[in-house]
Image (tube, rainbow, N blue to C red; front, side, top):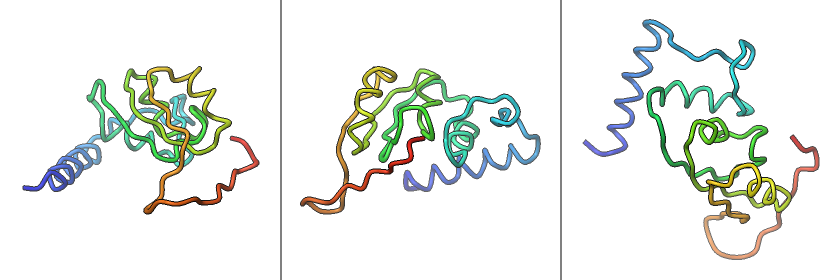
Length: 123
């Protein structure tokens, strides 16, 4: 079995268990502490329930806390690499997430120079 197939099997088993008897964490509307804009961290925390620590790579990390998928995991002791081209967030990563390696750069499928469009409405 390929490694990616193993992950799919594990996810299917975990999701099947959750539907039988939901052991979901409380949502942010129920007092839970989640940061992802679209509940990505909520979903991942349910799938990775019981995994005490780990390493992540967060591409397009945005602000270190607001609308951030990995902030919850950082709070739980995880660490990793965050990649975000917006230079305004670099000092915040240094201050708020010192265990992470933060790379202030963009990623593309090929080398060259691209125009960076910064969102002017901060989170």
